[in-house]
Image 1: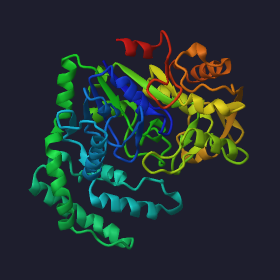
Image 2: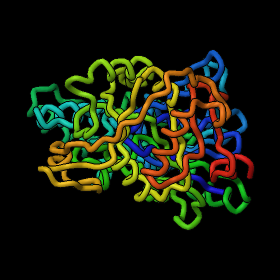
Image 3: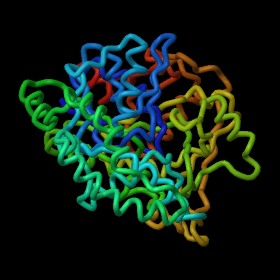
Image 4: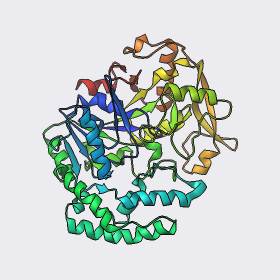
Length: 437
């Protein structure tokens, strides 16, 4: 069994908790794209883990975790995260963690270029986390990137750094920053690369052998569908493919070996940074947005930036479901809505008075959207920690069913709090079959 877990909105849907919850049923958990620009928060008892590069399964001591070839990895951030996890009593040895030899490295000049890129764009900036993710993917596409395998050879590493730095420094100096020196970069990177060496593995072969041995594999994406570089709100997107197709490429697994796709969906919507957000709570709804932000702790787990909050967008979520082929959906943060008198759900869009029911490709059109809402009553009852669907208030059950009908996919899991056991698995769902198989 190979299952892909994908965010269906703009990220921060709660993928970390769901992966952590499912990891018990799997042997291997693999990330397949992205870098350390987004974090998954996992709560286990009194311990909180913010995982940026590590798959959420790393907390389970008997699981093997993989960083796939589709990722970009900052070695300094990699070992900072390992050290933080070890301080909480979790083993992160090379026996438990495999890093693809084909993954690309984030270099110090990538971080500098990220700053200049945002400065160049001015009012049209993307709102990146400035961690060098985009420039690293640009170098990958431009065939000048430095892969983990390349860095294992000191001569190759030196040659690539010197060559790439010539071009990078032209841009860096142009925007008033001090040029970087190759010898200083090599002095920083060489010990990190040597420390990385024991973790390096031909991960696509490792996963192929695991599949032949009937091992169960969980593929975990970062960011989410509406941030996909091909299918998201371009250009306000990430630099990789968090969608189901990206899982096959980014982990090195044939598409027909993937047996299921799980979408993670919040009961409301959030977005970090710039870009269109059709259902954002703006004038007249600031109090609701602030309430949701505080109840849901809607601040970036890595950047601490406050997230923009909005109502559930059934049009965008249905688009994500169709694009990824969701077999089931995990609905998170139901309890955050407990305090609301009524709930809005966007069931369609209007642009210049014309009704559309599909997700536009052009960001300008998305900015012009007038959401068409249907309003449902709230439940004003505490749902925190409920583990049985039948114990939910009637209006909460109706809300869940309404969302399922609108996006066209079953809801198989409902999260009623941040802890592992604050979860409802719906009976006779595809999700239940994954838990019991």
